[in-house]
Amino acid sequence: MDVKFHWNKTYENKTTEKLGWYEDYPEPSLRLIKKCNFDKDATLLNVGVGESTLIDELVKLRYTNIIGSDISSIAVEKIRRRIGLAGQGVRWILDDLTNSIKLVDLPQIDLWHDRAVLHFFGNARDQDQYFSLLKRLVKTDGYVIIAVFNLNGAIKCNGLSVFRYSKEMLEERLGNDFQCIDNFDHTYHMPLGETRQYVYTLFKRVK
Image (tube, rainbow, N blue to C red; front, side, top):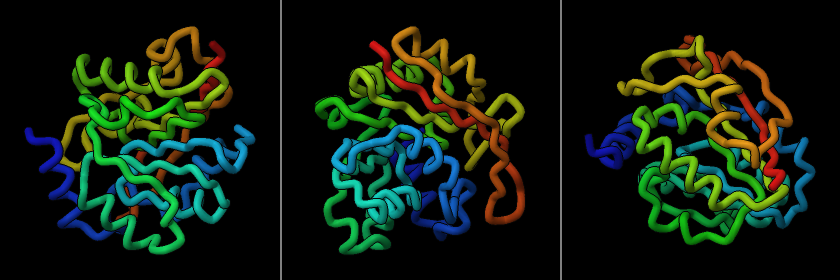
């Protein structure tokens, strides 16, 4: 499957509010970000940004070093148009988390934020590449937020099979360099009325 084509087609054919992961207000993510007590110039990377409203909220909170990354140029263009001039300081990077050619060269970051991306990587190679990139980029005392389908979550999304996680599975993948600060299950109500079961996790890099 051509992954870039798949996601460009998704964002081309669906309005924002009909995406199965659309959040009008990303309260769980903002709650965890608040716990990190970032300075306003902290480097905040939102991977798989899609058309996430989290970028809008980070701009409103006056963070000045926001990076939004996605494999889909159509998704990025849509979110740029939506935010408009308010987001002119946001840096946008088109890249593949499992075969990075741009993100891999970033200076180290204060936050890696992923909502509903990791669970689409079902094979070991893609998972290894994802976690390798994360560990390369997140600085000591930096934070990681990962929100993915939990073990009771859906087995498919947007026509693709997904790989579900528990907090313990994420701890194992991140290893001893990362300490879990917070975690909780969350029921997400989709725009069309269905629900999806997520696990939200906040890790701090301790060494």
